[in-house]
Length: 394
Image (cartoon, rainbow, N blue to C red):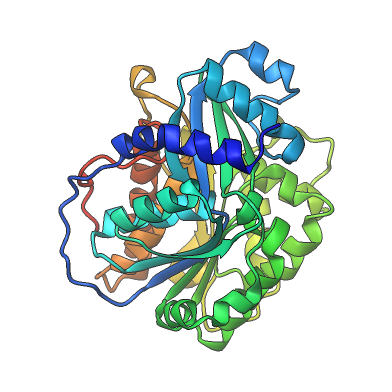
């Protein structure tokens, strides 16, 4: 039985292993500044390992998918830490993006993140490591559940992710009114969530979206996974879509959402989707009803090693435009976990930092920063941060 006691013992045993992965030599100013990027999510401790196909088969896990587990999946975590060489890294999709954006911006306190953790060693490690990254992390504590964990298992270049959320499962919208969190909400220019959060904390996501409209702030969302584009999750997507000012996804997610919304025949496979058809999906996303008409919408779709696609007419990107990706040499590739989070981080960091008056040029810089950031992540074990970024924001 993998209970809270086992979880705490496991965390204590490997806490030093996690901390050894942390970048403690990042040189940043000690001066605290106002929060500009705020996100909520499921704070997790990632357990990252290279496994064999037999391990995935044993637990009926598909290759290269993002999955949401439950208590019945805890034996997987036990076997993973016993049989494989596991690295422990602070994770969770929204938290990953916020951490990497903070790293790129190099301004302590410019980002803030809120989520729920358990009253255990995992929660303490998460708080400590995220704070060391310069993020102002505000965690609510659930005394009845363990902190969330996520197994990230790579086989070759493919990776399978399964998360058991525990205390991270639910973020109550009333938490947004807590003084410490409300202060960050009021300060921020951008609100960001990963699609994963709508599973369990949809009321909070919707409350943030409504606040973004009231305060005329940019509401950004990453689609995050194909399964979210189908019932029963699709209805939640449809409720949030009118609030999207920035939506980011990969080609598989774009196709899945297009099929879920009836724009695309469900029998069409990704490999048969032409660039023209992908462009049509992007335009449909852009043209979806919008509530905050004062904030222009941007649609960004990544395609792995193929060019990134952007459509944002109000910013001067009047057609679906493509931007090349710097391909990663096979010998430098580590794993793809968090690449999408890294992409969003680069985009948002550049968007916050820009000093160019030409909006079209600014978005091109955002894509460039996003592609660089995603390329950095796939060269690491998970969303780990090493020293200072070698990319200069404009």
